[in-house]
Image (cartoon, rainbow, N blue to C red; front, side, top):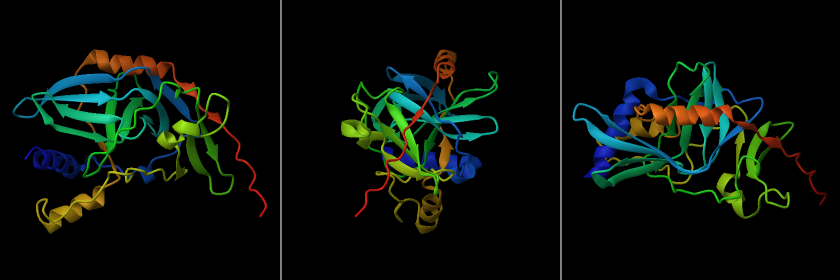
Length: 240
C-alpha cells in the first residue's frame, strides 16, 4: 500500500513539469566539493493533508556534477537522499541526488534527485573519503569524466573506489539509471502510465521544498567552504 502511494506521489511530481533532462545541463569546467561531516535532516508538512516528511542527506562528499545559469547541483554517493514519513516508517525510499545551491543568496536552496521506480542502495562513504581524497580524471579526446577516490597513500581507487568510481561523459552525466533505478511495470496504473513513468527514469526532479531555515542556512554555510577537486592525470595505456 505505502509503495503504491509513494509511486503516485512521484508520478504526480513528474507530470507537473518539474523533470529535467540532465543532458541539457552544463558540466562544470572546474569541479568543486562540499563535505558533510554528518548527516543532515529536515522535516516539514506538505499537501492538503499536512503530511509530515523528513528529508535526509547522508554524510560524505558532494561534488558539483552539473550547473545552470542560476546555480550548481551537488551530488553525493549512491542513495545519499532519503525521504521518510515518520509516523509510517515503511513509507521510506532512497534516491541518488543531492542539493542545488543558487548563486543568488535570496533564492532558496533545493533538494534534487534522479527519478527511479525503486529505492537506490545506500552506500555510506567511509570516514577517509572526503573532498581532499576525492579526485577526477578527464580523457583528453572524449572528455569522459571519472569521479574517483584517492587512498591515503595517493593511489586512485582502493577500497573506497566502488562508491564514487563511475564514468560519465562530460556534458552527458545522466546516471540516474544506476543500480536500483528499475522500470515501472504494467501494474502501476496501467501500461500507458507505466510507459510515461519509464520515459522519465534518469531525469532530475525536485525534492520536497525545504521549510526549515536553519537547514537551508547550514547548506549555504557549507557551500561557502567548497573546495576544488584535484585532477589526476590519466595513466598512459600499456602496450600489449
